[in-house]
Image (cartoon, rainbow, N blue to C red; front, side, top):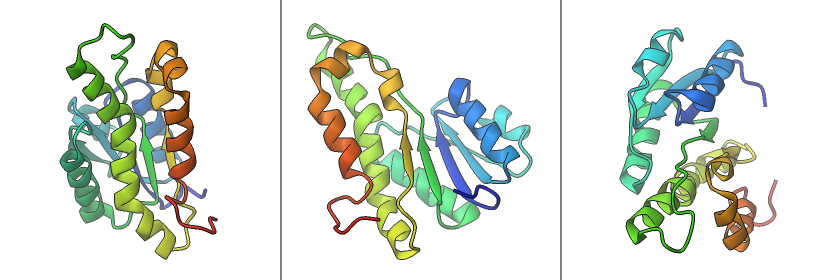
Length: 166
């Protein structure tokens, strides 16, 4: 994908891998929206033209508000890099509330973003680029417990049931 001039959203961008990704995309010429539940303003201040958005991707409303604000700033989204993740919900004794949060951030946030963005990508002839890194934030125990969910989400996102794909 050509990044020069592309509109990129990076979630979980206030620090760590998300911040590094935002810096890299910006250096390649992308118009970058840096989003996080932690204020990404300090990062955006160092990236000329970047837009910081404080958002909570654990809710559908938070995801939709993020995308709407990003599109107001830069127009249609070309790349949504779903880097936000939480490493909770690791065994069967984990409280239900933590499992819900883990699934909302690590799975549902990606589904909500894809559902909002996919039609636009297809209309513009894009392949529906949506990068997921949630597996890196989820423990190995969870991945062993839910391999079918991981495969289902990963295989469904590129076309969301629309065939032929690509």
